[in-house]
Length: 559
Image 1 (cartoon, rainbow, N blue to C red):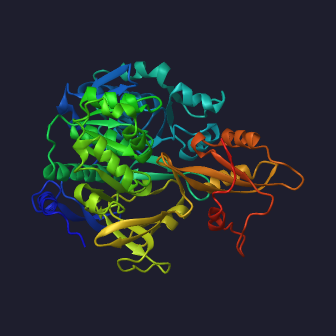
Image 2 (image 1 turned 60 degrees about the vertical axis):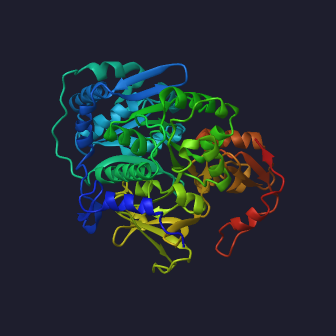
Image 3 (image 1 turned 180 degrees about the horizontal axis):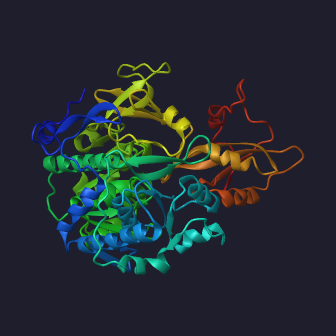
């Protein structure tokens, strides 16, 4: 067993111990006693109000490599106050009401979020990669009082005007963000366990479910992020200390973009640089050098592209001192290459595990521990509890694989308006059933599989049943099975195996177009295989995907 490095253990004890910045205490959370941070905000508005102290320091930088938008903390606070006043006075937004946001990463997304939660309302982060039908579903399910969107995504509705008041960013935002320059934030009561945001996550029913995050949930993930950053800086201080600057390449409709970046940077008074448009490794490398980026929260796909890009050796990347991420497996070979490409992160590189339902963070493996145990996702974070349970629901001993259960102030409130799914996911004692299979060994967590059939493509979770249901709606298809195939850069790609309906033939090009009409692009299969024989099934009619995977190397049509 590898013990925790002595310096790291001392740093953690100091941070978590009595009087430490991250001292914990026991508190009631939704009727259950659990550990929480003693020094914590009672709502996200507390951090918003405190951010005014950062004044004219740069807060947000949005760039595509040529054009830039720069916003200070003071300007951000003014924009938020004006937009909040508009939402409250002109749209009647108040506590518990939903405000849906449908846009690419942009300052307006962030401003709308803060304006919404400052009113005690709930921000709904609609997936910016959704198609028109998925957008309509999200709007119908969340029933927002107002929709804030950009032209490109609103155009996916095909000219059908949403049955909800809509603020078009390109047309309306300059006006509403300057309409009340002297406004103050509304003084409304907000409880720690009030809902703050809804993020949609795909489910095995084929329809996305809205994971509801409370103010406490988001505050917990931010403080855990701060704890990890501070402990690593304590044991591995950067050789060239610079003001913290975070580069962001994750979408705001993900916890990695909103919670771990936008909220964290505001709470910590940190400058964040957001890359817009299609990800370009060379632009990212230039930005690291120009802006003095010290931290980047990667996904494995983008990290792979960065470290293998020829320009990686032509830029000064010495400012980068922390690198952490997850979302899909990070092979040891990629970890090694990242340390070579970014020498400043050799002792702080991190790999984490979490899911949207527990506000994205359960465990982190960093630095020396990651080098010793590259296949582990690390030790469980403070205030978070993990149990590995067998099929009977009983905890299993170390070394045995079972379903991972998570408990703590980071576990979501519920699935929005879906009590059945909530009851299936959150069981007695507010333990979250993750559906992921893993084991604990030597105090560390290891993941064996995630939701078994889940496909992880470039950090995106893809549930095969949604794609299968779409394909089987086509008149030429009798049955379909979808699974993931390995891909060096993306982690996995989507493969569809289809069986033609009796007397029909399958046109892959037409079928691809059929899938694209209803599914976001990353869900559309890249690989196709047509079989004449029925798919293998068990006695109750379930497709035996392990049988299909055994022949994954057989001939298929690539896009």
